[in-house]
Amino acid sequence: MYGMLYLLYVIIFGGLGFAVQKYSIKAHDEIALGFLFSLFGAIFYVPLLFMYHFSLPTDLMPWLLLISAHVLWFCSTVLHFVSMKTVDISLHTPIESTRSLFSFIFAIVLLKEVFTVYKMLGVILIVLGIAILTWKKGAFKHLRHPGVNIAIAGAIVVGFITIIDKYNMNFFDPIFYGFLSFLIPAMLLLPMANRKHIKKLFWDKGIFVMIASVCAASSYIFLLNAYKIMDASVVYPVSRLLVLVTVVVGFVWLKERKQIINRIIGAILMILGASALVIL
Image 1 (cartoon, rainbow, N blue to C red):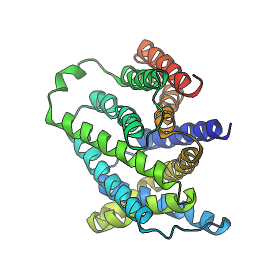
Image 2: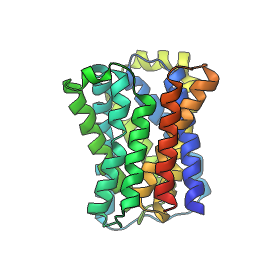
Image 3: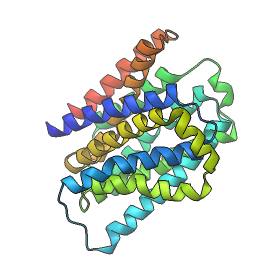
């Protein structure tokens, strides 16, 4: 029961955060955006650190895995931005949806989670649903672009991060872990960020970056809590339903009415996929 509630909050907060970032923040300097986004997220966690009591692992391995996860996340962010600049957006989002597939495979192979046909079917339906939901005419012509390989590489890296996060929930408290998940990227991005661009983004779009970051940080807390009590092969694919929230926001807020049939079919497939993962 708690796991389903956590996933619901992941989808709601994650979808809203992504919608704000997609529709309200048009930043030309992704590094400045990444820094402010990570910084606001880390600040959001600070009061929570003082509200809860938790212990830290004494073994070295969890800490090494934590550092590895954040270095990998930094790499995946770079791959994401590079691929975004070279691959048409109509193809980029469907390719990134394969993150669910890779996280599922890695969870089965590395974490020895139980494999079932229903799980596999659920993941495939979710990936297919996202692809149909976000696909645009003419996207096929970009399939051989080198940026496609970069996007796939980023999806594989995120799949590994998912496994590390799930494993580390055996040792870390979600709040402390989430705090470091935003603080470390901010520290890595700061030396690379242009101070003038940060200042301009802060004054022009700071409130939107803050809202998107707080939503993402909230979503991540619930995701980590879900990992504590549910399989990663279920949690991460189902959490991708946040795309539906983003689409609904675009439909209601920006009156996006194009490709309605695609969006309805994609949404149905994603819901069926999530049902197969959670119920069957």
